[in-house]
Image (cartoon, rainbow, N blue to C red; front, side):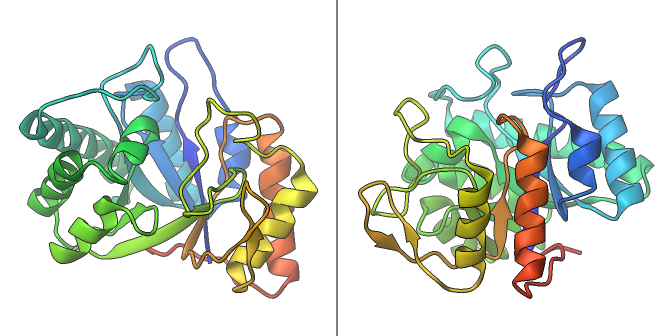
Length: 250
C-alpha cells in the first residue's frame, strides 16, 4: 500500500502543513506546482527533501486559483486546461531533476480533482496533457471517475486512491467540504478506516451503510488539524496490521 499526502502548499511567507514531518511518514508526495499553492523556493525544498527521504514525487496539478487554494471550480476551456497542466508538470519536473529524481505520477488537486470525476471535457483535457508529456506516467484518482476511465482508455497506468480523513457518500464519492462531517478528525477512527480499506474490509459511508473501497494508495491530508499525528497513527496501524508500505511508482 502507498501512503500519499499533499505537500509544498505554502506560498511566500505563508506556511501550510509540516512538510518535513510528513516526509518521514508517507511514501509518495503530491507536490503543489504553483497554481493553487507553492512557489519556486518551496518546490525546490520539498523536492530536495523528498528525494533524500526516498519519497516518490507526484505533480499535484490544479486550477490557476491561488486565492481560493484551488478549491473553486474554474470553467476553463479544455485546450487551456491541457496547457496549464503541462506547465505545472514541467515546472515540478525541473526541481525534481535538480534533486536527482523525477516526477513519477500526476494527481489533480481540489476542485479539479472533484470536477473530473464527472466532467468529461476537463477530464479529457488533463488526460491529454499527461499523454503528451509522458504516456508511461501513472495517474492517481478516485475510482469510478471519468478521469481514471479516460486515462485508462488512453493507455496511461491508473491508480485508485482512497482518503483517510474524508467522509464518503454511498456512491463512493467524497462528501463536499461545505457539508458538516466531510472531514474526519478522530485519529483512531481514521486509522481504523485505513486498515479496513487496505485489507478489503468495508468502511461506513455518510449514511451509515457499508462501502467497499480497494485503493492502491491512501491519502492523508497535510492541512487538516493534527495532520502529522494522524499520518503517524495511520502508518503505525497499517504496519501493525501487516500491510507493507511502498510507493506505487518507485
